[in-house]
Length: 496
Image (cartoon, rainbow, N blue to C red; front, side, top):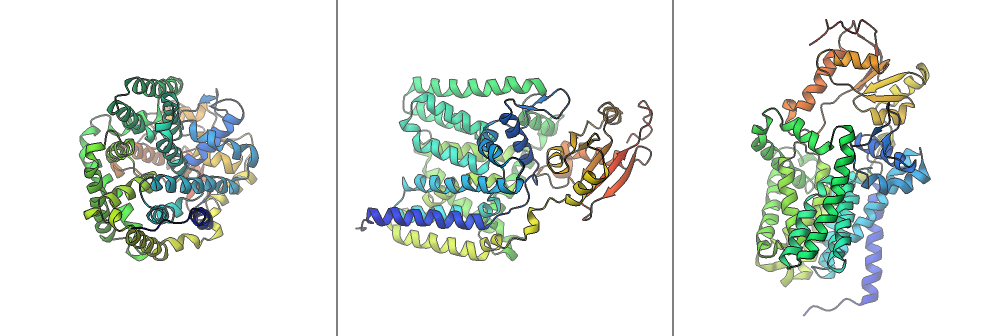
């Protein structure tokens, strides 16, 4: 019979462990500069728009409605935008605070299922994961989404149905990949024969999503739908199976690599380790089948994994909000009910795994060069501020990031087909185009992706010396600034 841990000791130890894990995550900062992923710059601009009482890209002609980012995460960033304004180096600390809160939610969620020791070891397996350390302080919605989703899972059976619906909608608005939550909770309500609750949950969620869809129609529709059509349209859907295989491989390798020393994260080792972990997680899911409909977290992780298989993009950060669910399923997949029969031994094994993970790889994320917090194109931004006029208009593929640092008006690049590219640059009075390498954009289709093909066409157009003149090459050769040379708008001699 297991001895009960004294309540006072449990509380003090829990607080100390939370502080320790949060402090280690804080030491992992900075993980790049704000704007490195471009989406993070868009989130900051969206939060700035909310601060000013609207949701438009105010710097674009006509004040275009923001449709690239749902407003949930920008809403969470509002306190930082009000307090920090242009102090970009401090935003990661605010987002780190959301990750630290996420640690507590993960523990509470595990504590419902396991004894104290296993719960803390499993929480540390999440919090000290090298991938989580590498994302600490990054101004992206994965950790805040996980925090909101876990609060929903912890509280939904005590909330009225309308509150659950609002919770699902808020999770979706933080990160649209949370859409499977609607199906998971609706199925759970139906399985418990709560038809009225099912109707309320779906009505609140779908009304909110419908309102967002109506908003996005002002500026070309929903970003996710456009990305799917852009990737799979025109017969590209025939590559669904290939993309599923590629994404499955990346998911397995990403998870497996977090349990290996840095020098073994290449080659076959991540696939082998990740494959073993996924087999355990799959076994846990199979064990959950009899109650998969009544337990929303089980159906959520199952639907989400399938969704990610066919999504045309993969970034390592996609794994972060899945980690607690995968850890749970892996523990439940261990043969012979070992965690339940031997909780202390299970906790000890998990603790050793955390230590191995940290010393083999995680600790390297604490050894940071302060230069990592410096923008890649910092030299170019400095040159722009010194050698161009505030009245000059620029265009670039990463316009939101460039706008933040260059203190100049940046517009998105116009479409490349025909003479539209040159005509639109002239119409928008663009004087300079800033080009940066776009090879690493997370596309599962690789070089065959329509999005990447479009960017390559733009890159080819910039090489036309009759239309564009390079005026500055960044010190690390990561970007080139081109001046637009004015010619007759009808001339299409440079078309490629």
